[in-house]
Length: 211
Image 1 (tube, helix red, strand yellow):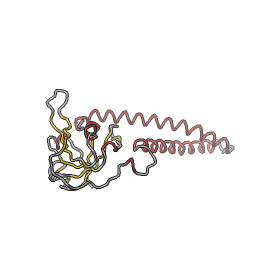
Image 2 (cartoon, one colour; image 1 turned 90 degrees about the vertical axis):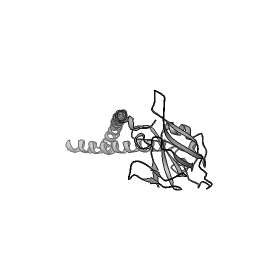
Image 3 (cartoon, one colour; image 1 turned 135 degrees about the vertical axis):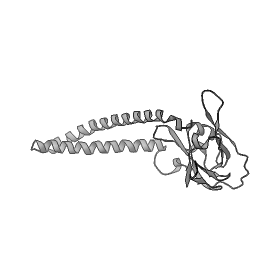
Image 4 (cartoon, one colour; image 1 turned 60 degrees about the vertical axis):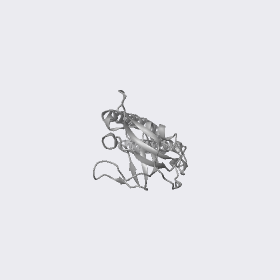
């Protein structure tokens, strides 16, 4: 199944008519590489064939399902609709000085009588978490802890090998415990630096993001 992410250079004032396949307020965001929330909205194209970009780009054929990638600003308007709603989605030009576009989200005038098929949102799938964000955060911390533990074990073993004495098991375990915590804090600090670099990258590339 294809997806569509509307961008200024290709989709400005090119509306697409969709039917929402899920309740918008049940969709959980996922943080993109710029640490901004991004929503995946399952839809059906109820209008004409829609070319996602310039010539040669992916075509969303009429009557076919696809995932609409939505920003927070777009989602704030989509949540006003219900599952099965027919919606006009357009990146429209703005006459206001403080912005050059806005999301024109309104009821579609297209006649479409097919009932929406059931589609599960991420929150209803058996992840065992309240949200995708909670799941991803927990998984990321697990990975950081595992890396810290593995590196701490290597350092502790190397330390006792160099001193030509493995020491007692208790001493080795104690070293691993202390080093794991310290390396975990270092890894979390590096993660913060990476996030700051992503924010800087976003600022540079902000022109390509519709908000």
